[in-house]
Length: 111
Image 1 (cartoon, rainbow, N blue to C red):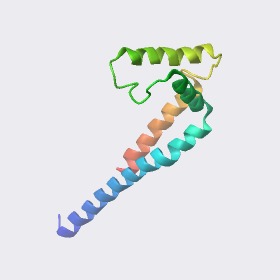
Image 2: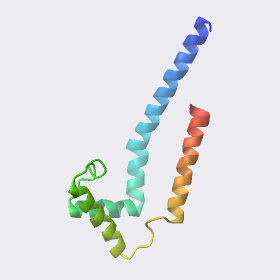
Image 3: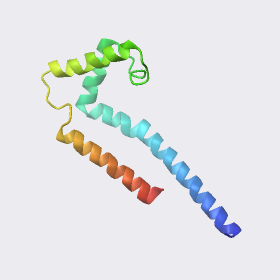
């Protein structure tokens, strides 16, 4: 490889890194809050978390019994609310397929 080709591929790698960081930032600060405000299920989850005083940041990363209790209270509140739009629904399956599509697009065209 010539010196010019090395510099070009280096800039491309830095560009991809910057683009990846920018996409993470956009999702965390723009898309995530938009989804949180416009999807009713997220509002209900946030309400349950506040009412039960659940530390949602530590929910998945601990072996304490509090995480198991919080999972029980969270899932139990959905079961007793009479809602049928949680669990493995068509919307949930579509979301998983969409995530795989986005990942495939990223691997194919961005990386």
